[in-house]
Length: 328
Image 1 (tube, rainbow, N blue to C red):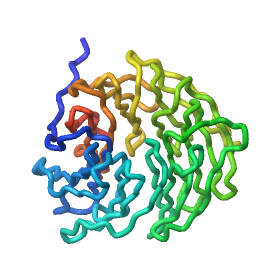
Image 2 (image 1 turned 120 degrees about the vertical axis):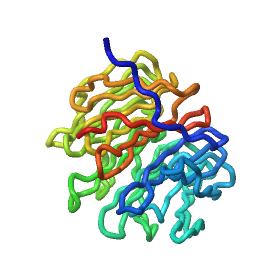
Image 3 (image 1 turned 180 degrees about the vertical axis):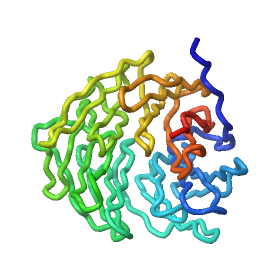
């Protein structure tokens, strides 16, 4: 008989709202305490201390509008957050501060989370859904200079971008963008010329989430359907369907591949977190704790594999923290 799935290592309560975004910051040397950032439907960003399991700081910069994305820039003192107030805030959290030092108006009304990519020391690219419903804008940070606006060709009928992933093969190579759209397709964009390199129809419904492994040139996407689509990128930079994996229950809100590329986790509308081996999509665990939709999943970036954690945020106001498959 298979072993029963584990219980969470611990549960973080006290967000008093549905949790839509999670991001770990565990780098640095001791006594650097690992933290978890969470963004909630009530507009608050909580900074959780993973030693005490309590909130160190609550950040309020989105006018009580839902926070859908949080990400750090070089350590835990510079935080980006995206809210349904159509604003992206840059926070300075150093030395106990909790101030918004800069912001960008997206003018976009959708749910599409931004994507951030470090391209050089002190230089990032950020992709976000633009004012025109089918467009994606890419900015350079911290200068906020526009790099490009990605517009589908006339008659393409992709609909709105639903999820974004900036990536590059290695540090000096050309940054590229993968975008999942409302029509169910995944599109690879070349940022330097603002053109589509490849388009693949992956789902019958809008693509809710995707992640990409640039080392294996392989990605995965989910939608409201009962299927995960696994696709790959060949040397001609054409997207191809690799395989599909059928799910017991429909609806995926979020997908994330662990930084070591060994396993991945999905956030389900059926209240469950599913863990798979990334190499062959072997189902490893169904984590059943939440009482409502799981909106987001995030792996910690602990340097020591045995300390690695998986966090899941749910509509039930709770964040579950799991320690699973932590051996190398």
